[in-house]
Length: 272
Image (cartoon, rainbow, N blue to C red; front, side, top):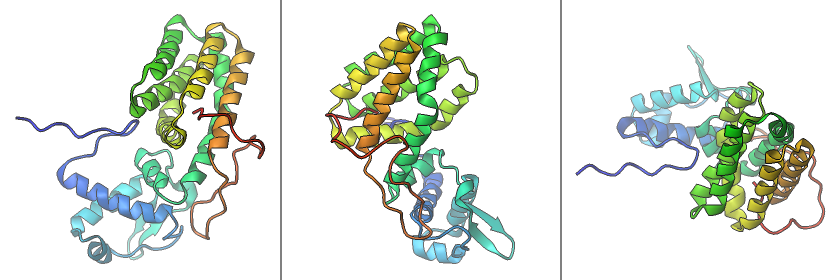
């Protein structure tokens, strides 16, 4: 009888089997240390032999792990120099693995603040464009995702539908550059929504706000769609605590998403 497939995390690929899993585990351990600031940009990492000792893994596993980190922009290797941590600007922070590792470090809230700032740049206008440009099929996709959020019976199903809702709006906006952008930020959105909904648990308020966005796009009201997204983003801002600046070498943070001000307590429930 064939063994069951490994479970999947929403928005993330399944874990690879066998030897590949070992080098992924090694890359994860090293990557997390880089992301939390144990090794600052410009620092030369310990050599293969030292990593073998620390991780209790073979040279071939460590070597493949370093190749993986290199592909993600975290490190680079030079002959007679070794493996050096790359400048933060070169890190692929939208990579699915990097997002997972980042979310597991003390810099998680800083990452979520950055994701929120990114959303403010394009989501309100994307919703306004979708209200003007969406096709019937695109509207059906937005509405279906919104319904699926309301009928979801598990946390994972809710997050999957939530991400699908926001990506469907980017597609419906009618701008060809927003579609690949949506593919890039999919994992970032899943990570943010997972954090916010797990923190509060109450999803009815979030569902009502998504229905408001869906209604404005369906009725072709761009201003209403833009305002609805801004309200949703404001609620999500309040779900993310202010972040102090970390020690030197750790991931940089800002204290609060742009547009969010300290004030009265947030309304009940999250609004991812």
